[in-house]
Image 1 (cartoon, rainbow, N blue to C red):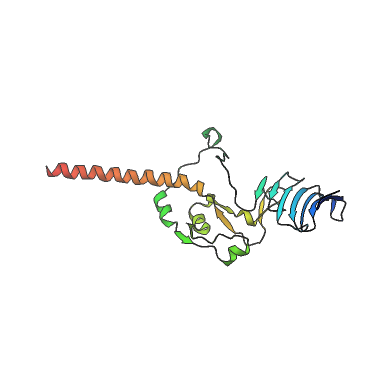
Image 2 (tube, one colour; image 1 turned 120 degrees about the vertical axis):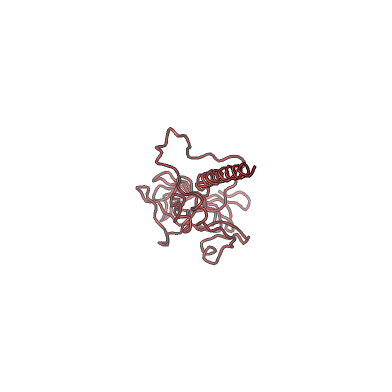
Length: 210
């Protein structure tokens, strides 16, 4: 069907069970039902257009900007939200406490913070922020709190059993900064204890001089 310079075509192809094309030859959108039962939407000049949304039949994962989502929602690129994003849980009834964080100040002192810009390797993986940024090193944090470090989303692939593997084989890592908060809380508490003890010593010294 054609309306003006736009056209809608339905066809069966060698790689999919059904393909719906919408647009003209210069700007085509594709709605497809693949041979593996995945549903996808692509936009651009061809089947490999840059805009991709996919709903996987196996696992029910949704991918935006990727044709191989590794999580229930896998987005390649920035995410903007006009309100809070609520996730996970913090209810103590769901937790078996195993102990407190020991030597928090010493741990923090070993974490290096620095300014940086994305290098050529990051550019090769599609990152394009040219601004000066600040942060930490995943390898450095992993030595102190390995629980805060995991495979970087751009590099992970999820197997059928749910385990994550590195696509590149290089195991590029990321830090969950929110998980560093308990370490900072314990460090402040320990530091405050030290301050309170010093205050007491100062008071005792002053009293002895009187």
